[in-house]
Length: 268
Image (cartoon, rainbow, N blue to C red; front, side, top):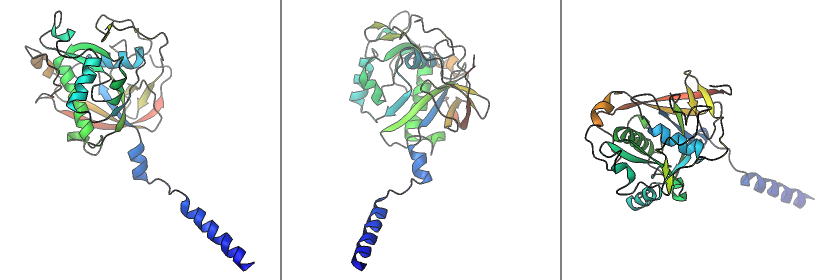
């Protein structure tokens, strides 16, 4: 009888030791989706918002992305898949000087390997700003210190947008008709037949953001806002058309943390 009880006790102890430990707060924080908010207001990232929203909403490519730290060769391959390789359409009339080919999903993320990306000819300065925000987010540099991917891949994150109402592809009920500047590698892009009209949320600050892939109340977001909103007027004159994504020296931006407090179902 005693040996049976001893055996039972050892079994219980063995089972107990095999149970996983609950995740710490730090582990839970590390596993949470990182949410990056682009400001689409004048003087921020401009018509790159159009391309991101068209791809995410109208082509249903989504905005949950994975930075995989691609090398130069893979980035070039992804750009070509999107139609943004050397000598792309944005280097020719009616675009040319001052414009670059902006691809979505970005050449820096794993999802670009699937093909079917969209591209848009955008002002070089806006493309530079978009690329600069992403780079600092990936490496947790500048105001993203302690907030981004910390240079560690793979890193999953989600995009969202604020001050988007002037762009039909982003706003609720807006048209997904191609304005003539949305392309795939094969030619002019075509919208999907069914488009989800949800994904609008209010933040603690009162801002409303568009999250094409959806979010949850309580989610933390990082809002990037450029402090020099007039830099575009200077930087877009006689600039090269290569897709270097380098951020200009006068393009400093702040990063503000905010929290989703409610979904706005009747947002117009």
